Each structure stands twice: as structure tokens, then as C-alpha cells.
Length: 181
Image (cartoon, rainbow, N blue to C red):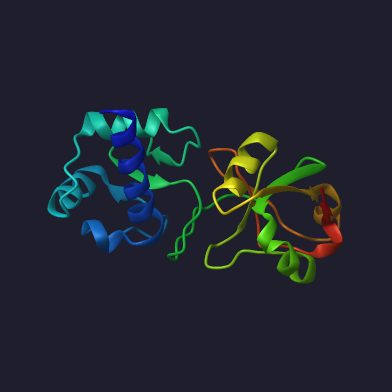
């Protein structure tokens, strides 16, 4: 699988496992899992032929570690970022003092007014790493790094979760806990 094929297939899997499972003729269970054999058959039916080896390659080489296999390797799911209803069963965790969020400058007026909103997703995504957050922000325009006072948010009653790929998740980041670069 070439790097461009890997990227394109990973994007398709993100679409299927996070937003539109029907696009590969599969149904996610309540925790977001789908049987690997059903996914492979559904991808083929959708014109996106994929082998188990290709799927293994995508899961292990994805820089953002977006996907995970069940312990027995029979099922797969996206680690976070769903717009469809799933319960990933993450337990609340204490975040580090500071977390980051990358966005584009064109969204700053809205963020200054409302804070960070989850929009169509289940949570706002935050990270401990500034490089990845800037890469995310750059996808939508000129990037800017926002600093989140996560420990202060938690002390004020906000609940944080950490996905299996290390992304921090929270319902909303009020403006009072944001610092603009």
C-alpha cells in the first residue's frame, strides 16, 4: 500500500467508523465496535477493497492512532471523534495542568464569544502536544494554538476523559479557561 493509498483509506475508515457507517454497509455496536470481517466485506461492497493486512497497516501506522482493535483483534473502532451516537466507556481522569487545542484564526471570534464547542462531535478534542494541535489547526486555515487551563477547569467541575490514543476529551471549554496565543 502506497503512502497516498494509506492516507486515502484511513480517511475513508474515519468516515465509516466515526460518522457514516452505512457508507461501508456496516453498523456500529453501542461502543462503536464493528466486526473486522463485516468491515472488510462492506468496504469491498462500497468499492474500497481492503485486505486484513492493509487494515493492520493502517491501524499500526496512523500517526494519530485513530483506530483500535479489540483485544482479540476481531473488532475495530475509532478511538474518538464520532458524530454518531456511541459510548466509548472512557472513565473520567484528571488532566494535566495545561492542554492545547489547534484551530484556524478564522474561528477565533466565535471561540472568544462562546469558548470551544464540541459541534457535531461528542467532545472537544485537546492534546498535550503542541505540534499535533497546530497540524490540526492548519487543516482549516492559518493555525493558532489555544492554551486550556485544564486543571482549573477540572477544579471547577468539568469532567475530562482520555481516549486510548491519548486525546483529551471534554464537553466544552468556556472562554474563562482559554488563553489565546
